[in-house]
Image (cartoon, rainbow, N blue to C red):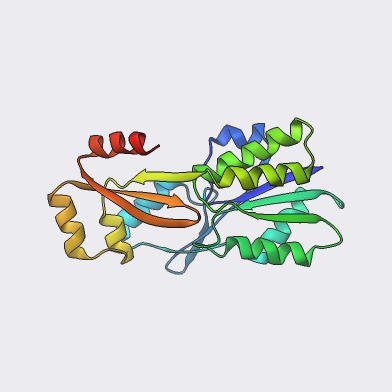
Length: 216
């Protein structure tokens, strides 16, 4: 049986997880001396509430090989194939953790780690596509080949409504964030081929969303 696993960097409608039988291994979020599991102990709304209250961006860490191994054992039966689709390895060590877990469990489960080379909704789409192909009777080799072709055409384009969180994380300077706020500048970022780059800067939120549609 084919099991499909991803990580907390994936975004998809919650109903997809049940409809397409997709297991999500959460990201670890560290707020001071407390650690939360994304979307289990702490959802998006709670995350930003803590950030706004503390004025600090937490540290995050990818699931460990042990966390993946435990998730695989809980999810699958001996002899099952586990397709583990993860956030781009160029931005996270999550894929490497899945590879390590797969080696640890070799002989019991057939674990196939897959580097999505993307993030967010891009991962969710790949997971859904894998399940649809499996239900259509495709072999695991055919599924992997199709996913490799699909990821070459898959990317994420996003507009930041504010640079405040990027300022708090240290990724942009205080002056740059302040100027962007005063000038109402909305940066547009593109995640393509595993790398995240700032593509453009436009004025106003509406203009940024219109430009995203143009780029898509």
